[in-house]
Amino acid sequence: MSQPSVDRQTPLEIQGAVLPLLRAQVDTDLIIRIERLATLSRGQFGVWAFESIRYTEEGKPDVRFPMNWAACRGASILLAGENFGCGSSRENAVWALQEAGIRLLVAPSFGEIFLSNCRANRLAAVTVDAPVWNELRAWAEAIGPESPPAMTTARLDEASLILPNGRLLPVSLDRAMHDSLLSEEDELDRANQRLAAVGEFARALHASQPWLGPPIRS
Image (cartoon, rainbow, N blue to C red; front, side, top):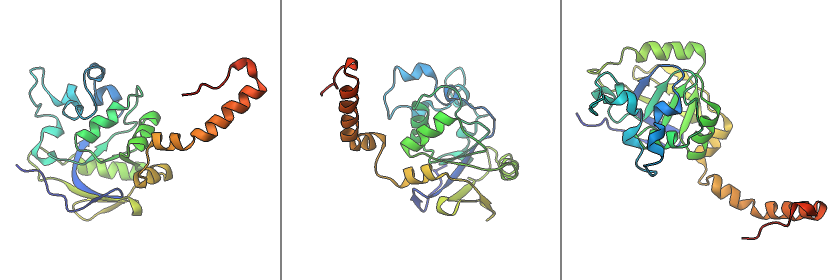
């Protein structure tokens, strides 16, 4: 079965099939195992996303995991449970999701550091309140291996998620995430813009407290 087609993709409008991962407390080690961090480079993590539940002990796709269902093939929207991305701060977890094709995360809540990594890497993440989550969960639980792709549209500029039946549900996108998705700059760009100010601070600090040593020149 071919991947579902996507008509339009922009930072604030994302269309695609939904991947339901409804369990709570999915930590970053489940997203990408720590053993992979030492052996892989950026661009190589996608195939290993959710490795321990995506594959059997023999290394074959586990038919119980939605990522291996035809209905979720090529999914770009991940519907997750409470506190998704908790645990260690590894940025590789965000890379693994992006490299697996995920462009939007929808959950009741996220791990704080994980959410910061999403912002830094422009992986959209939105939250939903309890009534909306309960409705989404009930809808997603009906998705099965033989279901048609659950094509869904997120219009983040309107803070809405549109289900295949046309049902419109509200989502919450914080301002920092909104600005990050629309920005062409990353954290390194913004840090470089502050180099002059950092240098001035370092020189002033040395002048007032010379025992700290002079600023290091690169």
